[in-house]
Image (cartoon, rainbow, N blue to C red; front, side):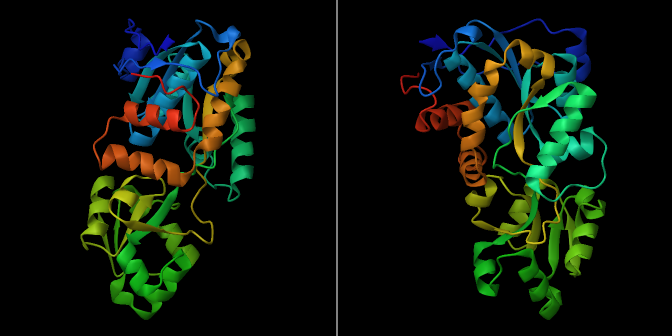
Length: 321
């Protein structure tokens, strides 16, 4: 039996400058399941980071549990505020492993303006360029794709036969007054947001209301707006009985998630790639929506939700406490 160790470490001035702080987490006892002990990883310290939202924190905990089952010593540095700080922590070596999104890497980190519509091509492009330019390795990507979409209530979708964004466009052409949208302020002006998707599909909103992300989901559910900008893996989709309208023209960037490490660190411990692989393969949008619902709607602890999922998948043993 192995203890999932959450170490309290003295933070360097670089960590402080990034606004990072060490977290605490429930110290589960972890036994191997399908993830077996790896002799080469015995006692190897791996600092796991994540950004500061539920999905990221969940995959961070999953990684820690997997590494503990393999015999490594994970250190928890999940809940880093902001993508730029998370990226900086990886590049400077303050964290060793995190999970990142192909669209974020391509646009935010590598500075491209035009996304690549095909998810495999998008992943391969960011993988190759980030490795060549920055010494960052993207491990094989997951089906989990946390991209933008428009959401509606399930009742509204059924009433108006809405499945895709093209369906929405045709509906609004016949019923223009129904085009009340709730979006984030940034999404309202970004070319890969509302202006761009309007041009791609040819619809015209009757009214656009700007809110914070959480308020948009509530706004859709309570009828403040008929359509809202959502993230396709958010747990509030299930919790509020919303429907995700398919982006059938593939306008929005692909945001498939991948485990990401510095190449130098991975070369020292290549076995980590095999430990992470089954998690990436098992994650899907539907799985993450349900996991996120347990945290964001039902109020369960993210570490416990991650542990229970790892046990249910057989990745770690059931004898945890």
